[in-house]
Length: 122
Image (cartoon, rainbow, N blue to C red; front, side, top):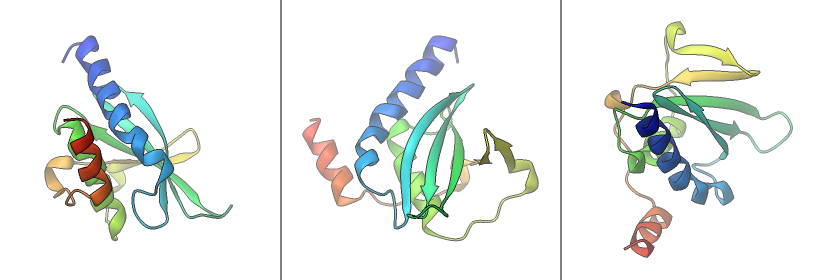
């Protein structure tokens, strides 16, 4: 993937996630930002509603998954307990970075909000 294609993919993911800034991705988890990474996108998620909440960065390689599936993969990941090897976890800018493998995650079904948004773009 060229640098231009990489930036285009990151922009596509960012556009899709903008609608999630005003509503939680799942109970207790809110999108707070999208950061670029080489060959991937990093999505900052705040778990918890109070000052004791924790911020995580989820890194998803965008060459393995269509941008439209990323919110659904995140919802699947955030909805239940997940186990990760120590190779997939690190610390970036004071946040816990978790590298996801989207080929191993079944995306959650589209929420009603996402269905409405996809219809509005037709």
